Amino acid sequence: MNKVVLITGATSGIGIACARKFAANGDKLILTGRNEQRLTEIQKELENKGTQVLTLVFDVRDSDAAKKYISGLPADWQAIDVLVNNAGLALGLEPEYEGNPDDWETMIDTNIKGVLTMTRLVVPGMVKRNRGHIINVGSVAGDAAYAGGNVYCATKAAVKVLSDGLRIDVANTAIRVTNLKPGLVETNFSNTRFHGDAVRAANVYKGIKPLTGDDIADVAVYAANAPEHVQIAEVLILATHQASGSVIVRK
Ligand code: 8X3
Image (tube, rainbow, N blue to C red; front, top):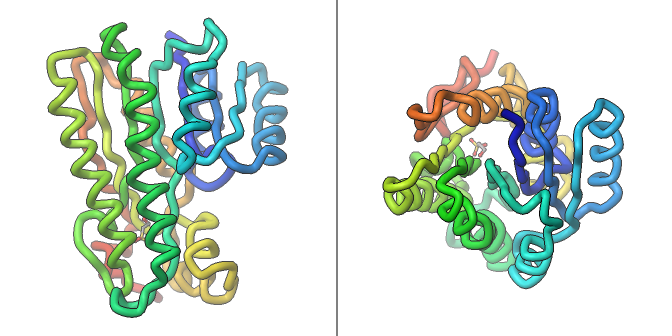
């Protein structure tokens, strides 16, 4: 059955890959992000292929804007079946004692509070309908800290624990909660982390075939379409030559 799927951070990386894969699956999409132009581009691309798309321009850090847009959804878009909490970022790779507090704040506000904001706005409707699925994009970075990962790793550890907590809180309903934990995925991730230093970003994926956004989106679509009694609770997805957040074998 076609679902209404809301994806945050849908303009790039894993988010845009999820948009394309859920669209190919026949679902209706609510795409959110900060970049209006890119949202409109992906909307046009998918509408041309027959997908119904609604775009909402807001930053998940802005809880008032999120509330305004989600509570103002047109009637036929209100029953969200799948919430993909994808919006998130890493900033910096400095030792914890030298990190930039502004970067910390942006990561905590986006990766943790943004997830909570969207969960708080969308999940009550799912509970009322006794139907729904929350797919949080965590990270291998949440399993264990790696050098310079400190605050980013902490935010993704929080995503894991918030996913577990939510799963407990909806265990008496038909709602499912999935925490996806990607490893090295070649997207804008490292470019953002290094504040636009493209050479440094390219080095992250040097000598190893990294994952793509599509590889992660495939797992999200699989989890969302698993039989109703199957809850894909957590999936760690690594590149073949990566064993953990800090063990990467390069050729
Ligand atoms: C992204 C994966 O290993 O670069 O969350 O932190 S990693």
